[in-house]
Image 1 (cartoon, rainbow, N blue to C red):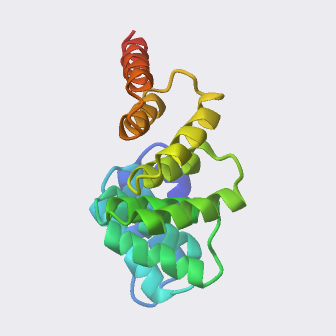
Image 2: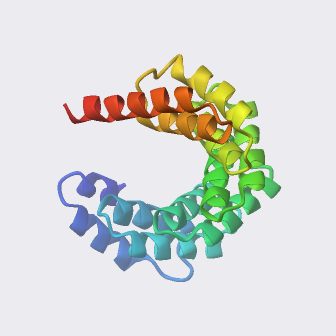
Length: 199
């Protein structure tokens, strides 16, 4: 509580205060809080170490494991992140965000079928989540399932008609289906959308 109050005005002092109180027998909640402070301070390496210590002290510490996996993903360690997210899922602690991030891991590891399964699970728990739908569309593109990509991106474009990524996905799908006029239209719209973002 003291460290939390101190972190508002002096994050470094709060980190020093907590670090001084942590030892092998101290509560894993302190390691977790220290990890959060390091994360706020953009010190991802120190945050990762703190979350690892918290999970070693209390393997069932869901929040610490979840944050650790997110750190792994941010630090381009998708294999480690995947392992942690899979553990959460096996333990019955997988929510929509967990499955979505697991999908991102599989996507980074070039495993589109597993990514598809993870994104579909995420959508079961969070129907209509646009991030999960985008991930699903990317996984389908990598499996050459272009008609499904067109259907999915059409649904997404009802909410984001000028989204550059969606038009790029549609362009790729049209090209593979030899629908060149539609592909050109999608490419031009993607370029126009990118120009709008720069304005």
